[in-house]
Length: 120
Length: 107
Image (tube, rainbow over all chains, first blue to last red; front, top):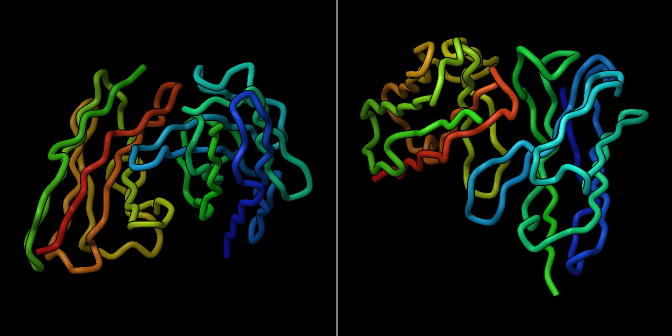
């Protein structure tokens, strides 16, 4: 059974940093691309970042480029978030891609989410 | 960026009713279109992949169709547990985008 368990959410002041993690199990982690999708309170879904199965290829939405860094290691996916702004406030979902590369596929399994609140 | 527009934004329906949700893309995306169901305080769950293929374990009352720029999600014989927000998601061209969501309320 595929399981994705996020951790590391919390409250941070504008300009601060936070790292969210996603522990994966139930599948061969290095064989699948992974991504982070966020959902602001009461809003829709936004793909913010993705990484290929072996980590050699990454993607960032324009809204987070230069501030967020995605990485993966030992069955864990990470999202390092720097220079956080109020509009980064959201639930951050870890999601498994149905293939090695972030192309010609889809997100098939999602974690339960980690809430990140950016406020002074 | 490809814009996905869903209709309606909200629908109140009765059990056993048939529901159709539409998703229109701002340019052709072939069949690279998925449908997700999100219940309150839960993460999204995949219902349909590649426009019309049911994902494992999804009840047969959910079906999808379409290609190019026009897609539909159909729920036959709606059940109370289908109360949720439904999102379409295109994975044809980066950035991969979502529709704004359609909220289904069960009367």
